[in-house]
Length: 73
View 1 (cartoon, rainbow, N blue to C red):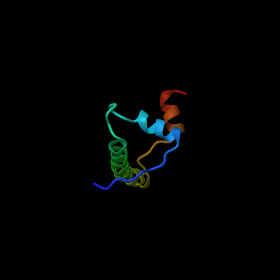
View 2 (spheres, rainbow, N blue to C red; view 1 turned 60 degrees about the horizontal axis):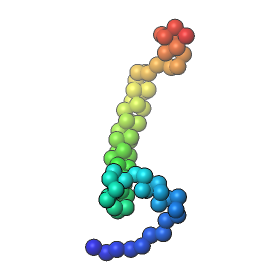
View 3 (cartoon, rainbow, N blue to C red; view 1 turned 45 degrees about the vertical axis):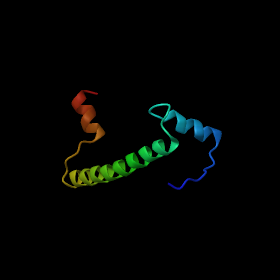
View 4 (cartoon, helix red, strand yellow; view 1 turned 30 degrees about the horizontal axis):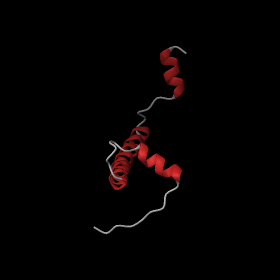
């Protein structure tokens, strides 16, 4: 495994430390988990956006005014 040094501000180091699931988790493990979550979220988000666009095109939506009326506001 190749290693390298990365400079982090104290503020960023504290943020990464706060994301650790357990005290012995390495920074590499934290960053790997975050990157994996972003990739999954990105693909999921794209699917949800496409679904929402189709629903709007098909007229399957309610406006705020519709919801307010239904709730009696």
